[in-house]
Image (cartoon, rainbow, N blue to C red; front, side):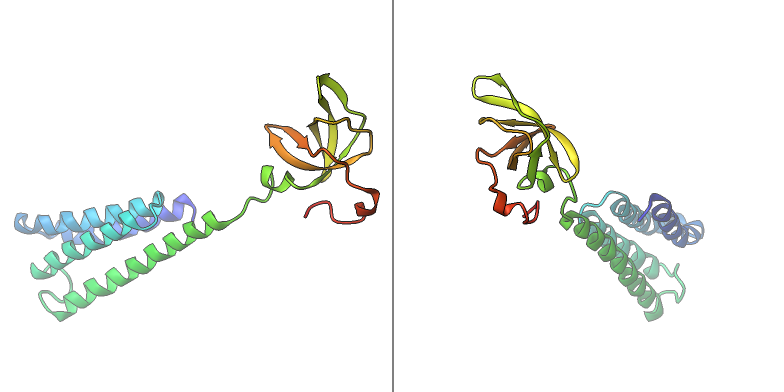
Amino acid sequence: MKPAPRILTFLFLLLVALPAWAATPLAVEDGVLILLLGLLLIGIEAITPTFGVVGLLGLLVFVVGASMMVNAGLLPGGDSALGMTLVIATALLLGAFLLWIVMRFLRFRRITPMGGREEVIGAVAEATRHFTEHHQNEYHGYARVQGERWQARSVTPVAEGERRRVSDVHGLVLILEHEAIPAKKDATSTHE
């Protein structure tokens, strides 16, 4: 959900309580303030997801504040079953909204990365030219992986066109396995 709809939703929830606040005498301001605090906590949950903790607290505070307003006769239906029905219906609606928010953010956490380190490790790299020895038993060069050119290192010499599997990534440098991939496996997928 984009920030603009979140803010509009939060303002709409506040506008539900504002007419009741304007009509309250000082004796029932506590109920209105508690209701507004509950709406504020629900709005905070919508903007900064805490996986339902703050939102659930806000929902409970909202129900307490709304119940105080029903007892004071400030909601439609006054101090009757209709007033409590309105509070329960609103609480269920807000609860469904919170559940939707929490489920959306939990779904985002399960999405696996589509690129980067996780996708490159295990892929087949092809040396674009012969690796040169930089340090004792460390060879540096360039390799092509999934259409991209990378810096690469190996502890064994690598010839131009030789294919090796990527074992690790350090920053923007690929670490290649010791053994080359035999020619008969060239027809297989470049990423297992």
